[in-house]
Length: 184
Image (cartoon, rainbow, N blue to C red; front, side, top):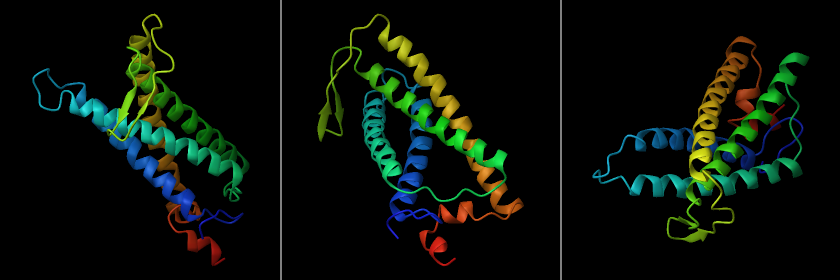
C-alpha cells in the first residue's frame, strides 16, 4: 500500500499530495495576511520567518515528491482522451507554478546575501544574491505565480469533484484511499 500501482496511488503519493495541498493553501493565506502587517505588529517579523521556513520545507517535500513520482508507476487515468491530456497538462502546470513560487520566494529571501533559517533547525545558504532588483522582480514573480497556482489548484479541485460526482470516476477516491485500488 505504500507504493503506487497501475490501478492506484500509494500511501506516500497520497500523503505528499494532501500535505502539499494544505501547505500551499496555508502559505498563500499566510502570505496574503502578512503583507498587511504593520511595522509594530507582533507578527511583523515572525510571520515571514514562519512563511519562509514552511516554504523551504515544502520545496524539499516537492523535490521528494518529484523523485517519488519518477520512480513510481502512474496509475491509469480515467476519462476521455481530451480529459486525460488536460489532466496531464494541468498537473505539469501545477508543478511548474509550485516550483516557480518556491524558487522566487527563495530569491526574495536571499537577495540580501543572507541564508534562510528554517525553524532554527538548519540554514539554507544564499547561493544567488545581489542581482539588480532581485527582491523586487522575484517578489512580482512570487505573487503572480502564487495567484496562478491557487487559481489552477481550485480548478484542479473542481475538476476532481466533477469527475467524482458527475462522471462517477474513481479518481478522487483513489487519491484518498490507497486500499480502494487494490480491491478492484
